[in-house]
Image (cartoon, rainbow, N blue to C red):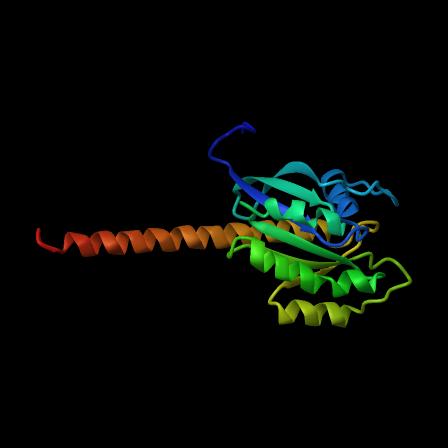
Length: 200
């Protein structure tokens, strides 16, 4: 299949979270199956894409946006919410502040992102010994905000692929249901209008 096939669905997914939580490492592990202990901080954003095949057999182009987590870049990130279908929200289990700041990211998402966007919560760096945030705390935060939750490690390649591919499946399912509901509503309105006389 040609990569320029216009019938292929394109999904836009953002990686959000504070600086140094491992967003770039997480993305590089998924894209290239590689890991480095240190990357230069992302300035503004970095854009990559990957073609994946969903469980249904449908092939989709996934646009992956790695955004800067520094406070001064958060206003930049706001503009990239437009047209987004999904968000992978990441914190570092060795950094309590990055976990505490998830509530601020969720506020911004609610204010700036499309209303039907899919969001998942990822606890990164579970391979590290100096853990500060427990699994239970992460689960409780996810549950209170109705989010799917993954404990992950980019270094050990734990739940990286699962997080990306499962959010792609969720986005596709939500979009498919929305399209189907729209078609049903359109058909119902069409049938209703057909039953009316010339004067309504």
